[in-house]
Length: 458
Image (cartoon, rainbow, N blue to C red; front, side, top):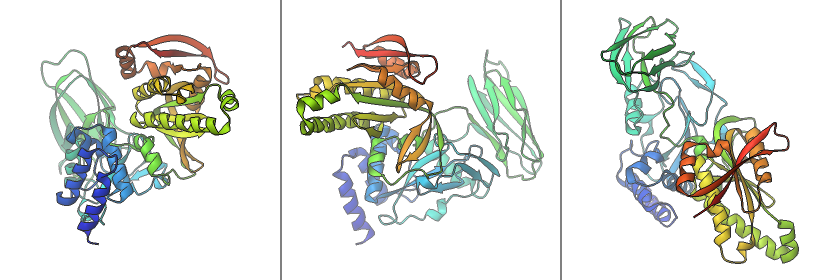
């Protein structure tokens, strides 16, 4: 078969899947008439914005396309200092715990939330792409390629300062109130902190920065008023092509992080062979975990018999899986009748929990005989591979499991870490969810844990 016929057949298969039609059309246009650059390292979140669909719909479509062989999934490691991609990997198990950027001569502990992006490139069997023109290069060798990609994704720094042969450079910008970071590639001390706060400045403020021969940037902590700022740099760094850049600190990444995509149910269903290497662990700062369990399951088996009770339990799994999938979550594992699920978006975990409870209350008999207890907790975890599956371990997991144990039949019990999140709190208010707060003592957990019992009032 020719590339064109292969592409047509695979795109037809994608069109018959549950992938969003708008995203399928975008992929088809990119394969059939897009440029090489269009088909290289595609960011589904950007596609979601461009075609007006949810980021989940866009990501799902690319996962389906990859499963069919239309696109290839790679894991791109972003340097935290120079904005380049020094390495990328074909499989999760290839991700190292420590990453290295040859340009910055930096080695650091890899963060799969902020520094590892899942991107999709058109497979060569459906379209011949000259990837060499976009291949990962050093910052100095090909800034044009790097900044072309940054521009496409809206990731350009606020400004940059290049030193030139004289070792001097300057730039002017206007700072809104907030926190920024000044990054000097090669500075192993990390970014300089720049804070704009207080009353706006009437005139231009000046910031003097010095770069040492070893790329260290000083001063390390700078405070100015919001308004116009002029930055003057004196550099003793020996390479005149180097420069520094300024960007927002803590700005959300508009990319599909490894932490996000690996928590999705569709990823777990379609890519069962993708998991971390056995000796790798990665810290995830924030993820919401859901634990559920059927109440009275022993009595149900006695009352209905093994065959009928087992069939109901399987239907209960299907109901929950559908809700969890729609809410950007994924089932980590099942333990008997219990479920452990993960959600990168906290509010979605609350929505899913309430939807599950409503689902069992409103479903037709005999599935409405099922009653579940649900516990939610959010916090830091360790991502690992267990039994050839991605799993999570740590205190957050333990608390989430204990919260579920403390819940009652038909109840959603959530900790303060879940309900105090601004987006979750706003949803609870607008959705008419009744909340009763109490403190509970949990086995193996020091001190009391504040939890909210949630119930829909309308």
